[in-house]
Each structure stands twice: as structure tokens, then as C-alpha cells.
Image (cartoon, rainbow, N blue to C red; front, side):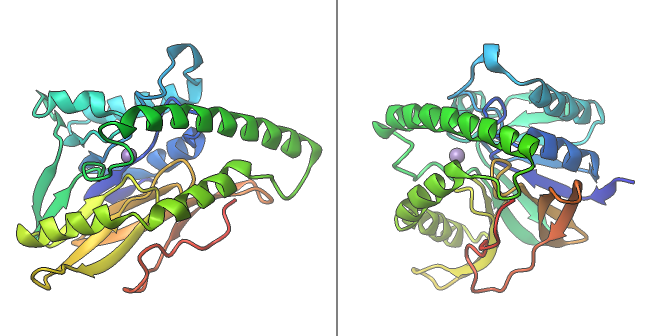
Length: 276
Ligand SMILES: [Mn+2]
């Protein structure tokens, strides 16, 4: 039985790349029944798109999303940097499907601002854009190689799966993390515009936290829906409350577990659990 959700926020699916965990995502999508869907950027990875290599599993996910369009629920597609091509279609509407670069909703009196979160990230914009695309392509082949090795490990019954790409990414991430002051820039912008809740994706670091703005000490709830490449997380809004879910797959039992992740207010990026 699918769970009813008032608003479902997903970001950073990176459909079309080796990094996307499409199988898990499909299972997750089938387990929920959203009344509104917000696709918060980097959904189809147009930067790395190669139709000749488009995986069948990813078509299943796309077909499911198209199916939701016919279910007549509002769907907002807010483009990110990997699908920045779609930013030029800001405002385009097909019935219940809208492309918007940003979205503001009033949720139980709380001004809630949704956007992907790449606009002040200098590492993916301007002159760095081309470098980011090239690095992304190299990383994606690397992930493909890693998954190939994991396939053999599964076949041979090896318990500890090698995760080259995760350790590589963690190293790059910690280097990048110090420069995540662009997130603080959004908080300042949010506070200036009397936003209560800011919802982003982009950094592939799911989290829920209260951040105070430097200029007017206004508190902003900062939520990040994470991604479906490593963390497999989603933000669900039900009865006026936000919850962050993580989808995990238990390899020993061969079953899926949907975990409600609890956060303390001081944890900005509380994901220290070992990845499967
Ligand atoms: Mn992004």
C-alpha cells in the first residue's frame, strides 16, 4: 500500500548516468502516493546525456514520472546545473506540469522557497562550467567501472563491496565543503525575503537544520533533499511536517528498508552512517 504524501521533493536523480540508483528510486516511487511533486534539479543529467547508453531501468523511472503527470497532481520541475538547458523554459506549463527556475509556496503560513541551489556555486557556473562537465564525464565512467567490479563481487559472494568512487567523492566533497559558503548566501537571501523554510538539493548532502542569517539574525529552516546517486534520500511533507527519508538496501537479506532519519538541530550534514 503506497503512503499518502502531501508534497514529495526529489533532487539530483542524475537519470541517464551510471551514478543514478534507478532501481532503488523506482522501488521508492512505487511506495509513495504524492499529492504534489517537486523535482528540484539535476533530474535528467543533460550534461552527461548519451542516448546510446541510456539504461532501460532509467526509462522505467521516467515512465513512472510521466504517469504521475496523467494522475493530474501538480508537478514542478526546477532545473539544476546538470539540466540547466531547461532553465530557458522558465514558466512553461503543460496542464499540471510546470518548469520554473524557483518556486515559493505558502505552507501552513510558512513561506517556503524551493530551488536547486547551484546559482551561487562558482565551481559549476561561468568559466568553470566546461571543466565541471568534463570532470563529471570522467567521474561517471569511473562509477561505471566501480559498478562493474561490484557486479563481480556480488557474483563471487564478496561481502565488503569496493567503493572507489565514494571514497574519491568524499575526498573531493570535503575539499568542496569548506567552500560551501554559497549555501550561507542563500540563507542570507532567504532571511532578507522573509523566507521561513529553504529547500535545496545540489550538494548531495541531505540534511535538515536551522540556520541563522548573519545580517538580521532571522532563523531559516534549511532542508536539503540529498540525491539518488549515493544517499538515496527524499523529503516528504505530510500534515504540516517535513521528514527526510533514506532508502537503503540490505544486501544480506535482499530487502529494501525505508528509514526515517532523525536530526538534531546542530547537525548540518549528519550522514556519517556507512553506505551500503
Ligand atoms: Mn546540481
